[in-house]
Length: 114
Image (cartoon, rainbow, N blue to C red; front, side, top):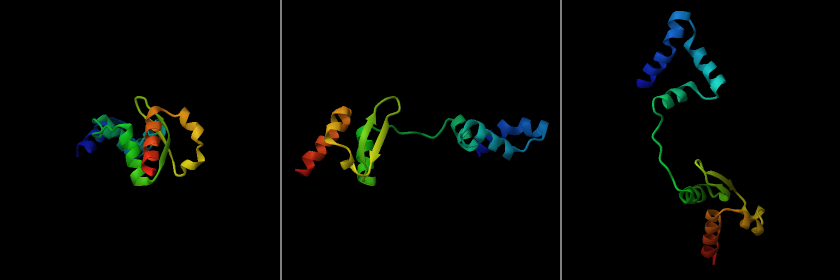
């Protein structure tokens, strides 16, 4: 209900005064901003609650649930991950180029396989 009220509040002037189609306005907003109008409305109202995760938790989750292996982790404000299905495509020499988190994870895998 609150989302509908807010959406109407955003669109009402254009609809009432200028007779614009609210559905077309929502589509135009998507094309201009690259985001669905309803997603914008939810964000403007405060967004969805979020939960933060440590990179190690993300790696463990993706490995266990999806069977993927991380090959690159770029920690920053928004940590970026690159996962693959076949880790054999990545030579062991490349491990030196990876960050400490990934090296620690790789050592843990080696210890488990022994």
